[in-house]
Image (cartoon, rainbow, N blue to C red; front, side, top):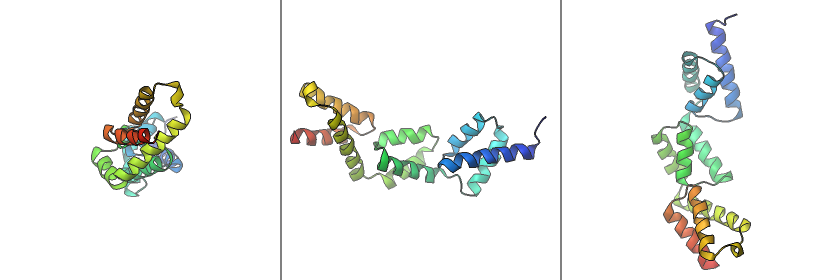
Length: 162
């Protein structure tokens, strides 16, 4: 038995509200999830437009929430955050705006230091030659999205204190 248009629309709305009840989502992320659930693109576009009108769906708010969560719980550098948000479908202008607003040089440095200290606690310098040890630490921080300059500053400070 085929569903009528109203039933399809209501089903897509229900799925969208259910997904949004868990956490904030980007517009693109929500579209992909609704497509995977088998909803038609035309229906999804109507639902997305309605959710945006009601301000239940807002990419800027999503990006702010994402970055605040990362700063507090899972520290990552500017480049990593930019990549994550881009993969979630957030527009580059929104990403740049939110990153500039929420991620200062100071708190990015704090996050890098926090991650470096965490890495040091689980890696003994005795296992490696000193140069290799700090090279691995630098690689770890780079993989977490911190700039070369910031990584060099943080690691140099740690080397001085060793």
